[in-house]
Amino acid sequence: MCRVGVVYGEEALLYSFPEPHPFRSDRVKRFYDEVLPELLKIYPNDLVTVKLELASLEELLLYHDPEYVDFVKKKSELGYGYLDYGDTPAFKGCFEASSYIVGSTLKLVKMMMKGEVDHGFNPVGGLHHARRDRAAGFCIFNDASVAIKYLLEVVKLKQVLYIDIDAHHGDGVFYDYYFDKKLIMVDIHQDGRTLYPGTGFTYERGGGEAEGTKLNIPLMPGAGDEEFIEAWNTVEEFIDRFNPEFIILQAGADGLSGDPLTGLMYSERVHEHATSRLHKIAEERCNGRLIALGGGGYNRENILKAWRKVLINLLNL
Image 1 (tube, one colour):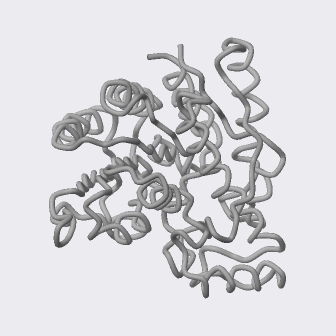
Image 2 (tube, one colour):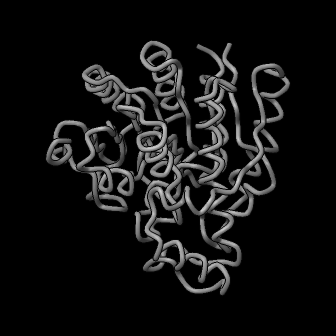
């Protein structure tokens, strides 16, 4: 059994766009109400709840531009308008809400580096569309990108592996680290010609010294578990070329069949497969350092099924 820290607290519910926006706090509230209590009963000594923590300004600036951070602060105080072209509305307190997500992902990372927990799960993390200088696709600050910067520049790790199985391509992480050879990135997603953000093509493999460190695997609408698992074989062959010291999994649940925003047809078996395989790789290659981030998912039942599989497979090797 492994000791797993899971981010838990009322502050997680602050990141919630107004109705009828699909990204609202009921996503994580149902997980807290229905899945987490069940697993805490089954694994009382191994599953640890971790209070949310605000990211400091210094931590936000590891990745984000200061002008953009100031922009979010001002829009947060005003509480109206948009942070991008129309997908990501501002709301009162959105600066603090998104800072909690970044700070909590970093808190888990720090706990893992200290050996306080073996693995971590932040259900409100994985805001992979936000860029250094702008919001996008429901994402204000990019907690994964901040964590990557922390691990590479503060902890001084030599290589970090980021794997994204959200139906939407993780463009915020992918392009802002496109020329960074220290970030190994794999992204399995619905083909960009059929889904936002319209990116993530197979010929994009990293630039300059980082060429060959990035892998996109786009799947056509209707692809299911078999197609994902076939793609995963390619993923493991790719990973074998590198020596990551930390693994970040963006475990978005919007690829499951019935999601209102996407066209993939996965079951929760995909999350079971990805998490269990990465768990084994982490134990073999990087002292077990594996953190999972909740990512997207807009069918509430699918979120519960997928995130349950993620947590169970972090707890069990």
